[in-house]
Length: 214
Image (spheres, one colour):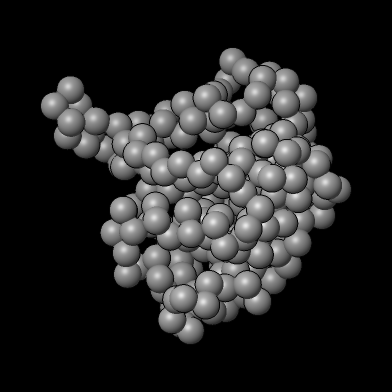
């Protein structure tokens, strides 16, 4: 496995180690962050995803938070719940796959122009392996936008996630990309909705962006 050897052995354990397929069997047609955080995700995709491009929505569900006014040539969703993927109106194709048991992506090299992982990276038990293979399926220079908030299914998030604050999460996700070894131009972003005085107005939203080396 490619788990980060600098972290404790049990860093990627979870309180609930039952098969993910069982946990996600029941579709959840709800959003897991509030409207302000969703708008921040959409803004990131508007900024980093090329119009007319081929987009991979990794760990997808029934909504992809893509900017509604931007057309894409293709949007592929990969997730765990078939009913959610079937309901997603932005997907042109979809795949059901558990990345914790099968981290290799079922796509050819350089298939996609950009990829997003929305409020799900905390559930990956071998994130380095997944992100390493993700770089393979993106075109050289293609961005991945990995966004997260302070919400999760606590029994399915990996142990290390629970030990860190927001700044720690940004550092950890950036470390995942660094450990994968085939990402460049990594930036950590705080896109949390705030008032004019800088106070949070709802759910926070953070992201780490990297570009595939190909």
